[in-house]
Length: 316
Image (cartoon, rainbow, N blue to C red; front, side):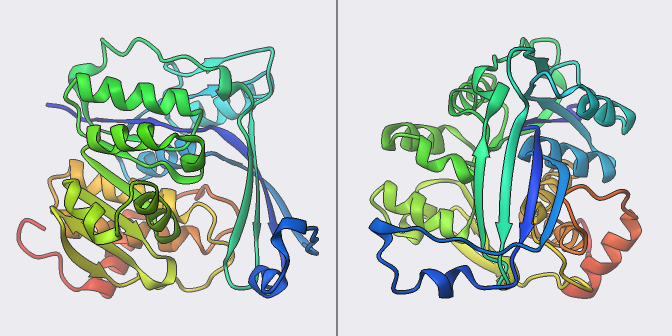
């Protein structure tokens, strides 16, 4: 029986900055063509991150079997060692000694708005591994932000191998051509984006959000503190947020949502309950600085999920 979840996405070092001011207030009414603005960020942290590593890490905490495909540079050995120490296999990852590991600089303001700069580093020169020995064990896949050529290659490979795959363009959406986006979303089994990305993606394809949702079998839109929307063959279900006990930094919560959702799917849960599990797991990440939970009590995650959404019910 298929048991692994294929994840391809960045493995990166995160520099997290927190501003006590509002990005929106500072930019409101500004002449953007002459933009020159600075924000004081008194809070600074350096963490392990990257979309691929974040999703794989959370899947591993939830007892799933992640298969991580990514690329690191000459400074990536400590990160690889950390992943292996936590039980995440790195034998399908590659190291390129002539380049640095990808780095993300994420600034968050007082309203949880974020501005991110991403340097792809070694990942821009990565290659797709031979996964023929893993094929029969892969139940689902997710293609998250990394070098666009690798994202395209991953969706093409999953489509050819008839592996259900979620396309998660994220911050890399602007790097895709309109034709590449159109081709990729229709090769994928589903698309997962946040609300800003959903508007951008639908606009790039010349559709409204509802029209786009009807054109693909599965669309999930995460909406931060407003929860998320699940479109199943165009039918929309809105799911309330799972409230955390405190909010320190929202960075990485979306990746935790994806891990929870995939955990639910591969456990035979419905799309609705899988989204609720994703929301519950994501609520724990916003309570920490950084994107990687040190540990997670699965019973506590389930209890928070039940508290927010009610009993699991028969068959979930």
